[in-house]
Image 1 (tube, rainbow, N blue to C red):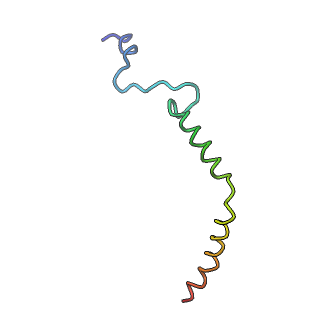
Image 2 (cartoon, rainbow, N blue to C red):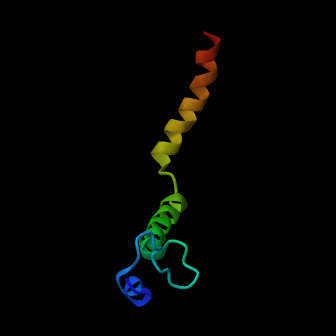
Length: 67
């Protein structure tokens, strides 16, 4: 098999080409979307009711440890 044929068909063990400095290659768009979703989720405020429940739980923990 000639060198040109190996390059055209992709030799066994050849690494896929990556564009520029993108370490994720073809998965970069998925990674960007996941990061965007995570950032939005983390920046959301905790609902008041949930914050109240957490506060009640924190107050109840010392009581439970004494018993």
